[in-house]
Length: 254
Image 1 (cartoon, rainbow, N blue to C red):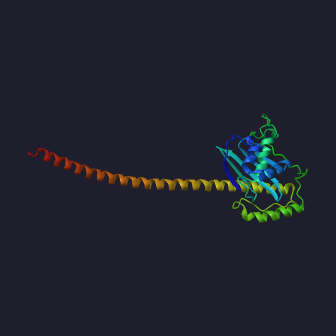
Image 2 (cartoon, rainbow, N blue to C red):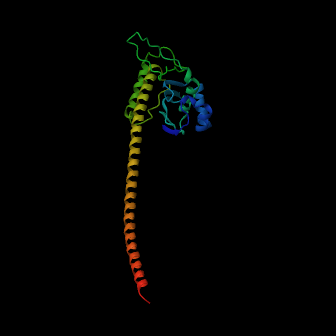
């Protein structure tokens, strides 16, 4: 689900609880607040104008991409919800960013003397683990592998075509869930790029249609102007004839 609304804030961390509640309404806000309070939000990447996150929903893991650019707040979630103007999962992410955005743990400091150290990027924040994420999540057991393979087979035909992938089984955890999240993020990025391309194409087609209409209107006005000029010349001739006739009558002796 993807939505765009106008926004006066300059940074995502300025979207406080009252502002969010006034936009989405009480019910959606309360659901999002519950997800936030239950620590179901996991920030993957974040800066002042963009967040990529995951929310552990009731029926599985959902991926969110939220951007604030040029006075427009763009939200995208892999959930099937039709909540407007954006869903409870995006509310939970924005609440998390408002309360914790400035206190996210920084990544490891790079050693300028070590050429192997990767360049630091202040836009990327360290991801926070879920409250119920257990240690040793890197171990993949047989049952999780079976669940993941089954999920991938269902999702394969939807990748790059549908924003919402099959729900993740609640019993899937550990590294298998991380793999699912990675697939969902890649699919979201692919869909976002495709939708941006479609939006740009629609805008171009709309502009071309407007130019075509204006061109036709200009041609019609040009024709009307030429007709008006012709009528004006005819009137000028009639006026001249009347003036000449009046002059002759004036000069005729009584």
